[in-house]
Amino acid sequence: MTGDRSKNPPKSAAELMTELRRDLKYTVRMQQREEQQRVNAENYSRAAEPVLKELGARGFRVNTIGELRQSNAEYRAAVPILLHWLSRISDPQVKEDIVRTLSVPWAKPAAAPALIEEFRKAESGEIRWAIANGLAVIADDAVFEELAELVYDKGYGKAREMLALALGNMQDSRAVIVLMDLLNDEQVMGVVRKNSVTHRKAQGSIRDAIRRGSDWHGLNTILPREAPGAAGDVAADLGADAAPLLSKRAAPM
Image 1 (cartoon, rainbow, N blue to C red):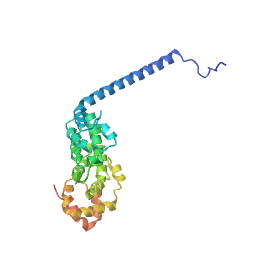
Image 2 (cartoon, rainbow, N blue to C red):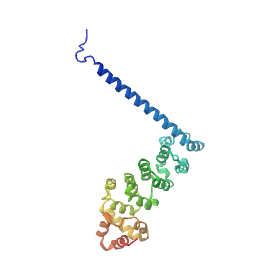
Image 3 (spheres, rainbow, N blue to C red):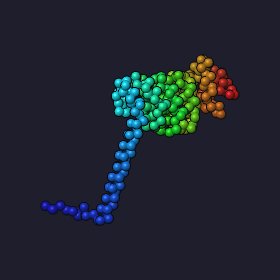
């Protein structure tokens, strides 16, 4: 029985040529993509060679640095090697791979200062975001003042979101005060709100900061003075208890 071909009429020469051109363009794009991937892999291997060689000497036989974090093993012995090479590698692919491989709990506390330094030097928004993402994992109270200073700098763009997240993971009571001050900052307000920074929690943090007194001096140089912000509003609500805080924030530099 012959099928009814009326539903699929033969294509015209023009239609066939259009499909052929489309197929050729697709083939060319795929070839170009494969070639770029090959070049990227070669560049990566060349730039990562000294790192991979040193890792191999310590028993970490991997073809890429990222294989460490994909191994599901705690590669603590590899952390000092990665930190050694972090500032010495200029290739962006390899540097980002090192950053992401250091973004693990067992890289605490050694990796945080190194990542902060790289964050300051980063020229690419992509690598800066990757570094800030790592800091959200490994930063602790020891680097509070450095992160508080960075998170106020709007020049760091979207990466500030992850810095705010890092502050939200800290135990230092001053971190809550900084986050309260950022509640009206459009770049980071979403992250701050997700961290459930509440009025009551901020009051408790300010009281704690006042009690500890001597710990407040660092924050005094970080909080912006042109507007008291949410933290200042909470401090005002505390009345007399917050007088020391308000006077320190109002003091000239």
